[in-house]
Image (cartoon, rainbow, N blue to C red; front, side, top):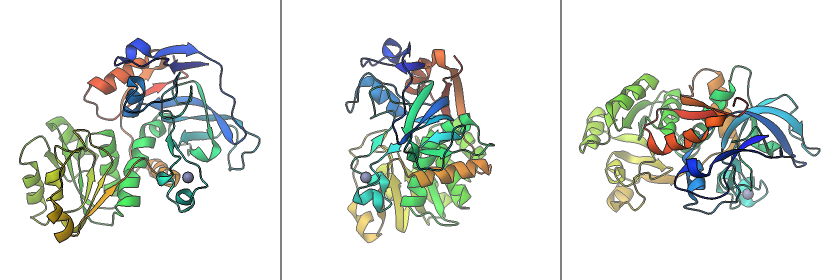
Length: 350
Ligand SMILES: [Zn+2]
């Protein structure tokens, strides 16, 4: 089979990521083999290629978002799954036996690995075939395309986990989606609208602000303007917001805290502009706010997201689809471009 392999690290993906002919994997007894039709890019693919901030198994195949068809099933698979099923990967590999996993908190499993990033050697979604534990695939209804499934899986699951599982979003709340034009934000806006929330989205330029409004946000604010948080406060008639969906980090975090209502909740899943932020502790104790962290999400959360995609209530947004022979351009585009939506590649289409 053909797969996008790198055998050394580099700052420039073009120098190291090559389409190679390698043996197709054999599924273990608890796994399924998937013919990959669509796979999408994430920043963790770049971290893998760069070899930082963490070490990963080498040689490496990246790709944590993949959708395709089950073509082989391991002998001990007991899940309700059969050859020919259309599936998407749930890329959160956990032990399923520890205290955290059996408490329903698989995202807190100490043995958790992000598939395609921390797994290997040669185990990720950017290949014509891949294998996954049967418990780590979600079936797709016929009206959910492989492209849509691969575009929404990681960001949709993570945004669902932040808003629904962690922040316990409720009908009609006021929700601030920071970075609404990012892959995460695109999913966050749509999930908050499922709950009929008033959604204020921020973005870094006018074009992305307009796109946030087209996705359903009620208001859009430019978070690069120094008084952005005052605009948010005005929109809420000085009441503040119930929930903040945060992944920008240092450049906006202190102002975000000032926007929470009494007892409001901020949930964070990243810190693109820096992690060494400050907290005015008066907000924490006087206002009784909740500061929550989140990473990835549960298989059940991914199932919910895929169901809403099937219902037409969550719309995956795709920026670019690249032929597999030119898949390395996707890594370059991730590093350099202002995207709106996901970049995909199609391993069966060279
Ligand atoms: Zn576990």
